[in-house]
Every structure is written in C-alpha cells, then in structure tokens.
Length: 70
Ligand SMILES: [Zn+2]
Image 1 (spheres, rainbow, N blue to C red):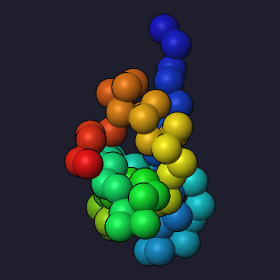
Image 2 (image 1 turned 180 degrees about the vertical axis):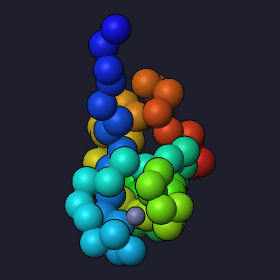
Image 3 (image 1 turned 90 degrees about the horizontal axis):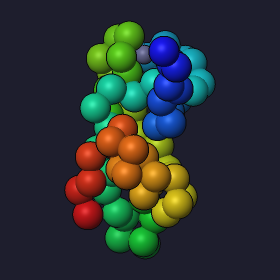
C-alpha cells in the first residue's frame, strides 16, 4: 500500500526541527485572509502553527488531512 505523506508540516520550537508532521491539524483563516494550520507535533505534543496558501489549505481539507475551522 502507498504511504501517504502528510502535507501539513511546521517547525517545532521544542525539537528545533523543520517540517514536523502535524497531528490533527485544524485550519483557521486569519484576520488578513491568510490560512493557518494549528496542531500538535506527533513526537512531542508541542503545539505548532504553520501559514498555508489557500490552495494548500483547501487541498489538505479535501484530502481529509486537516479540519476546517473557517
Ligand atoms: Zn516536537
């Protein structure tokens, strides 16, 4: 079976690692109209945030990888 890469990734301030996979990401729209994913680092549980483009935000939601909160 194909292993799917998670799209929603962010920098973890605790692990000091880039491109950490986000667990249960929720995508919000910011006041300026941008999209921001918020979730926890799978490995350590620290909350992470990542800015996303509209296209990526919509794709992550359509693929069931993230929840929509806007
Ligand atoms: Zn971490």
